Amino acid sequence: MPKESCIVDHFQQVERLNEQEIELLIALEKDLQDFPADAILSNDGQESGQLFTLQSGWAYAGRHLSDGRRQVLDIFLPGQIMGLRDIGFLRTRTDLIALTEVRACPFPAAYLDDVFERSSRIARIFFKMAVRDHALLTERIVNIARQCAAQRVAHFLLEMKVRLRAPEAEFDLPLKQSIMADALGISAVHMSRTLTQLREEHLVQIDNHRVTILNLPDLIGRAEFDPAYLESFQKND
Amino acid sequence: MPKESCIVDHFQQVERLNEQEIELLIALEKDLQDFPADAILSNDGQESGQLFTLQSGWAYAGRHLSDGRRQVLDIFLPGQIMGLRDIGFLRTRTDLIALTEVRACPFPAAYLDDVFERSSRIARIFFKMAVRDHALLTERIVNIARQCAAQRVAHFLLEMKVRLRAPEAEFDLPLKQSIMADALGISAVHMSRTLTQLREEHLVQIDNHRVTILNLPDLIGRAEFDPAYLESFQKND
DNA sequence: CGCCATCTTGAGGTCTATCAATTTCAGTGG
DNA sequence: CCACTGAAATTGATAGACCTCAAGATGGCG
Image (cartoon, rainbow over all chains, first blue to last red; front, side, top):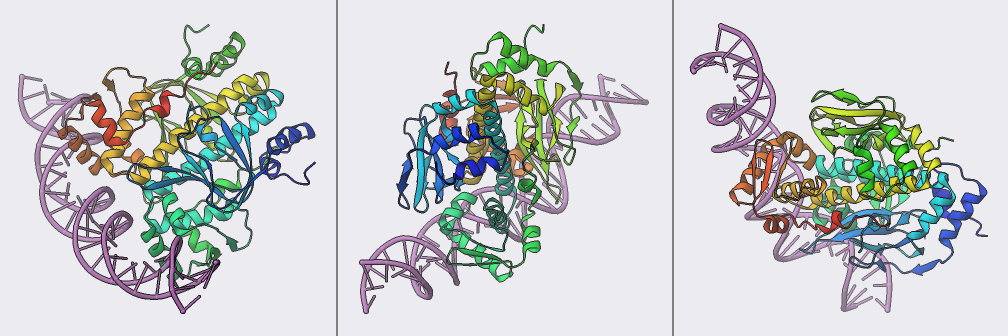
């Protein structure tokens, strides 16, 4: 039995699980595979039906546009299930790419149906997590549609801090600026300028993929960030 | 027994239901209420836990920003469940507002837990529909983050055509330009200009909230719209 | 030491927001 | 039937944010 399972941890953040439920989830991680940074786990246009649990490392889901630009749709952290977006389609519509060295476990989407049948609580938690993702996407839409670049970046950094459950003002962020830019819908050039601007305002410091938040209240104000939006998403058992 | 239920129809689009499952869903619609256009069904900041099924009419979920601007997050059509985004939060974070005369039925979010326990298939369908919404949101993010105004509008019109299952080139769209603008993250003024532009390109015609698509292939090309993204989301039983 | 990817900085151009003035149109009442 | 009214849509002009192209700086790594 694995000493610890990221995915179980991740689910426990929503609701406490019993032994049987933990078994069901651990079974999702029985075929761990290692990938180097930049590895393509799954390809746009591939036959659908394959999911991954992410055990360690970072990955992203992206879409490539016809003009060569790219939109980053999700940045995955350990414990998340990757590929859900594309089940229901015959072919995938996104790339799944490792950002760092990654340990992940592929499993067939159909297995989820089994899991749901065996445990309605897990089904409920999956649904809840889907709703939670929906809330995250919603914030991202507001952010992208209505905020200027500096606010988008500030918001992104704060979202990362919350998702990483980083209690300190410092955390690692192994992302190139171009990735963040593509996630926020701005150009890589402007991303650089914007980071410089936030640095000059003494709000954050970013060196070598390590983020230090220098002035949390002001950064929150700048981003119009409502920290309640993830923190209140807690267990209710 | 009601002769027809929008919500059952809506779910049947994902998977065929048996009698017991239909019963469970119809129970969600037992307390129908009528609202006039512009009625506020639910308010930002309100205590969470209330959902609505939408039986007839259109409604939207919106967020008001501190500077008075507004972001439209969802446009709901009959059969959809409204308010899911905010379950999991103690207080709602969006307004729910009627766009037309609306018939809707409020019910407690906790009732879903019952439903899931009684039918794992319904739980699965709820999950699938959440994933489907996720896919829609994803397209919307790509659209808003990476496309110019004309493409956003073209994409929006095509999405509406698909969601309305309008086989013809004509359909009603009871939305003010300002609502569409707020959904697409552009100003109302620019929305007007952009519609004029699409009209001048002989791609669409919009009179009195009735849309006529004059040149579907070109409009699809203009929007970089992938029609597969909803059409392939079909039953799999 | 040199190479390559990444990041930074500059300059000019495009898209969209904003402000403000009109026009259109449905609804209302005389 | 027509004038009045207010919301919605259109149009013009200006300003600002961001993109693109291009050149240069930085920094890890063989």
